[in-house]
Amino acid sequence: MASQQQQSAIKGAKVLMVGAGGIGCELLKTLALSGFEDIHIIDMDTIEVSNLNRQFLFRRSHVGQSKAKVARDAVLRFRPHINISSYHANVKNPEFDVDFFKQFDVVLNGLDNLDARRHVNRLCLAADVPLVESGTTGFLGQVTVHIKGKTECYECQTKPAPKTYPVCTITSTPTKFVHCIVWAKDLLFAKLFGDKNQDNDLNVRSNNSASSSKETEDVFERSEDEDIEQYGRKIYDHVFGSNIEAALSNEETWKNRKRPRPIYSKDVLPESLTQQNGSTQNCSVTGGDSMVSVMPWLGLKNPQELWGLTQNSLVFIEALKLFFAKRKKEIGHLTFDKDDQLAVEFVTAAANIRAESFEIPLHSLFEAKGIAGNIVHAVATTNAIIAGLIVIEAIKVLKKDDDKYRMTYCLEHPSKKMLLMPIEPYEPNPACYVCSKTPLVLEINTRKSKLRDLVDRIVTAKLGMNLPLIMHGASLLYEVGDDLDDIMVANYNANLEKPLSELPSPIVNGSILTVEDLQQELSCKINVKHREEFDEEKEPEGMVLSGWTQVPATNGESASTSNNEKPADVTESSSGSETASKKRRLSEIEPSNHKKETENVESDDDDIMEVENPMIVSKKIRVE
Image (cartoon, rainbow, N blue to C red):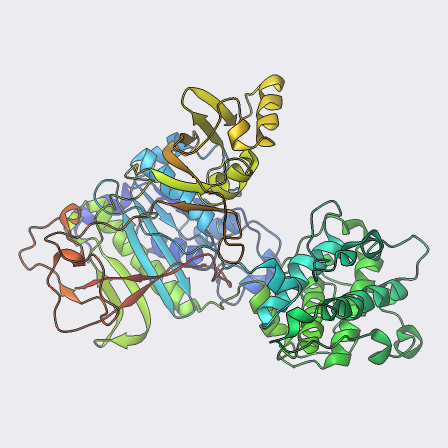
């Protein structure tokens, strides 16, 4: 039974929930049943059929509606006396600024991407509002507590960058099925159905300069009177036949590799698909554009069935035909979406045909979709457990029980007979550029790299700033905002196209930049270090950002374990006198004989997780 103090803290609390998906549905239900009476929810997503197997506040009739609004209505049916406000919007919208966050007693995250998590973390720091972060992936999950000045912030621990692959591997020498997926999704699909003006490396196949001729470029152009099936066969023969033959002409490439096999449509498919099977252009379509599919028409019912070369070739041609027949208005604007059935079928077929050419094992549609969409399938029970733990930590925050905060990990297999592993929060990382203001170091070729490269690859992609402002000394080089006049916008746009060393205030070796985001109220320093050359394989961006320096160990001890050791389990101090702000790191504590390591699982609360974005980070833990 909750104490009077606890009940008072719960009833008087104003809580912000960000995310109304897998974790969010369970969290809203648990908050309402726990006595919370003033809850606000932000979520920009709408309900999809694939959500219904674990987001239990939603029904089939809700498909297409706002998650935040439907979740609110569902909970109010059994808790009509409480106040729930819903916002069908992006948490990064300007209206959700620092002043908006200041009105809440605690913020609870149930997000599915790194970018939004970082944004909320920064707003909570600026507003000095406690944040309870969470994530699940399959049977794994975690809940962490972040209090400004007392515990580490969400960004105190570095998060692995998304996995990238060298262009030459993708276009010329794939060795894994994921290489074929990236080729099919990011190159071929984008070339056929995306922005025609966007740079595309699809034609980079060999050192033969003739391979990038105008004639090659024209293959992808379709004239108005060109038969769709003949166009599809032309594309098929070009990317799976002619391109492979062009690549084979470079003997040096294949000295120590298996030579791929060119594949042409005439060797796999009948002369006319329409005469043999009829036309997919006449097939009926229900459920909207994203539900258009060639599988029923081709008699392919099981997405876990492995298709052979002929079946993949049929799907490739017929999917392409359907895009032109049923979704012609979208061509030129499409990007791959894992929830777009026809796009998934096309990418699966294209990846499998390429895999066949390079003697790489084929994959089913189900497997290919998982790879293309970075999918890890969710477990509803994990979401429910994590939601319960979020509420427990939120109550501790409201009661200001600083010494009782815990980061809790949900494990797939018991460790010391426990499936839930609670540990003490870490103190803020002095090397964190977000909450500790430690300068970052950027190695970059200041003579070749443009300001646009810095903005796109570092400030936006790595630092996660939405409305960046870049200063060099007293000179303002770049700014984003609605209140800029036309002259300022023109000047900043002109700066974007200039090499760093040729800017009005030149950026050279030793320059110190100030980068700010006024919406997030975040500012950091970047020390610039000029570097001439970069390894294209290991450093494809042509620049390296560092600054996640390790905390120095005390008493001469190493801050990390040796190669032969795992971090040690350390028992919490029994005195109870240490607060969260005084917790010591493992490097300061003598290791015990028992060794254990757990994972920091950051993930998606939905049916999928971007496994290459967030984050399997080894943590040194104290076991309660």
